Image (cartoon, rainbow, N blue to C red; front, top):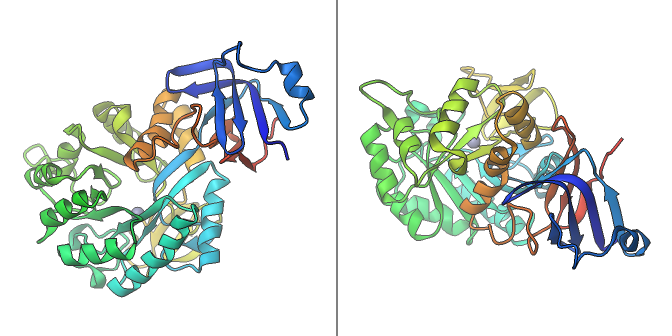
Length: 396
Ligand SMILES: [Zn+2]
């Protein structure tokens, strides 16, 4: 297998902008050069083609973008990250990799505390092996008024001791906890998380504007799927959305699947927060990359029809069946966002939030060779993770 890979002729999205006809050189698991190459240092194309250890791929007419980073994902490929066996969880991760997600945080849904602690232990082993970037606990510390697809009987107030129990069970791999910060213990829990370097995410919340400001001042830095599972903006009660959108310290998660958000709501958030404060997430459940049918989301039954997941009881939207390649394509072709801004929302910003910008999130020498190849219509045509093709380039 070639240890050196040269991808030539693409439109490469770099931290400095778009390089036309650029090349990316991969050596081993890392990026050795990212276009525009230094011609003095680069081997010539003839030398590359002749070298036995080198695979040269002409990707003219295609885009090369950094691998996608998903902060919020509950499953895929028929598998649940909350309930599945290790093999099933790996199947879910693999499914999302096939769609360009080279870094993934597994999200749990509300369950009882012992089950979640046990799950955290299992997922932390996958984090240690490098299969996932960490764990996001969504629930049980959320508001019964905004529970979405979480089991009401298992919800509880964010008592810092309970929050601590889950963080400890994750053995250093807890990355984010979503909580309704207005509940008793909420603000102390935000402080606790911030002190432990875990992202406190405001979500599934019934907080007022003022209560949300207090949570941000205490150290919250993410809005869990902004707009969804929180009060709408009112003219005298602007609520959490206004507080989260206006504050530079907050990155807002958006589910860009065409179901969770009206395009105008997405545009409003993108414009107001600016491209450096948006993270596109999937919030995917088991049916992502798999198909319609009946599934379990934690303890609750979900019916997926035409790619939309809803609780059997009550009909709440229950996660998505989105993959990040579709979120990318939709953002450019339907929402009309600039490619660089979409790359920020899918790679740069979530990598920064995870504290992993030194290794992933952009195409730069020294970083992991995680990249996605897209055709001129932004359809996925190849995926590389740590220098290995997960999806071989399809250049037909
Ligand atoms: Zn979720």
